[in-house]
Image 1: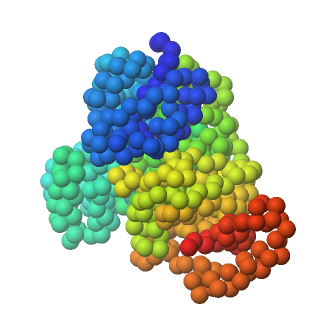
Image 2: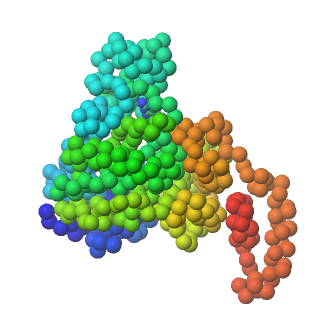
Image 3: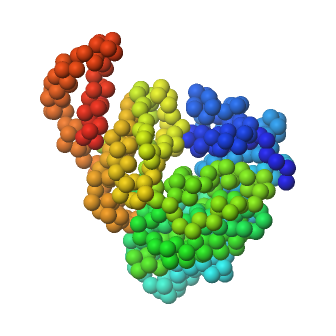
Length: 507
Ligand code: MV4
């Protein structure tokens, strides 16, 4: 295979920035596409070249596969990196790149397609000896077939759309009495969402954890497991915190899940970075859920406990290099935790909060990493996913990682828009979270139907007291203030005090 010299990134935001960093470190030329809404975005500023491909809506810009391939050819790119979301798991796009003589930085289209059909994936996994949840092997022909399998595996059961994933078209069915209505609605939702009415059925697992395995395969027949990520902390099926290792996975379970994940990847001829998702039941049994055929949002926690650069590895594998000896990971080193920073308001039902970032201060110091797509002064658009950035911490053990997460959240300031940072401040103070005692239902139960409770320290009624404290502080530190020109913006002083208490003040 010819070496890659120039890569077009078919994505935006923090993952475009992340891929640009990998390209830089390898000495490769970079180009990005962008929509009219992203003209002033950070990846556009960082890339060697940037090309506008259309208006804000994704359909008219980041999802225009044909236009992106034409652009890659026109600018002399050798490869296309799809990032995650958008075209990253679109088998037709991967094939279009290949047919045009471009390297798609990801798996072969056949592997994407095999895992895209959940029924086909279940069949392949079973044949490869990967444990799957008891259920159907074929699309359910009709209600009668559904009723038969449900009785076999026992209620409650889960109806799922074959073309789904991520929970769309999914129905929990408590008893035989509810099956007919659930089957009908799962089927119509599958048709409406995916244009494919194939539905299958599994036994419902009660309160499992979501544990996934990062795999990597080169084009020379070597596939490795890079250990697990614990992803059970989800709000309405959206991951918000991920960590590695999982607090409940020991070396033996890690070896068995890793081996199963490698078999899963090998069964579909996988190459490049992939993730095999499992549900881990309270009794210690694990079951294949689905395989994500892309680099994932939470890849940094794996990078921090393996010492690998997964974007660099993706590019090397894509140009035909074999995985080196550094891919033999006997055990994770230390502990990493990632929190996803979203532009949403936890005090108002997590409503999206677009707008201009008026002030921004990132945390720093030992064990702290920030992967961001934003900068101070940037505007967050309503058109795309609200994820702004990821804060990732590393420590020798989970306790040190938690202490560093608490420190980093205290230093972090994002003003001008609302973010979910208060959720993470509440989490690091939560005893059950700190003890690692949670499953996929825990966060939604913890938050309940309502909103996050405001910490007592941020009550508006306390403001006069705080103002008096700041005035006193400013007066007693007037010499220092004088050296800085006699002016110290009040918000900085207030922020410093708040940082010590781990709360945020905004006005
Ligand atoms: C399940 C399940 C329980 N039993 N399947 C949700 C997203 C989709 N990828 C699969 N999902 C689930 N499938 C059976 N047989 C519970 C979930 C589920 C879930 C899984 C992983 C992480 C978070 C979740 C939140 C709700 C439901």
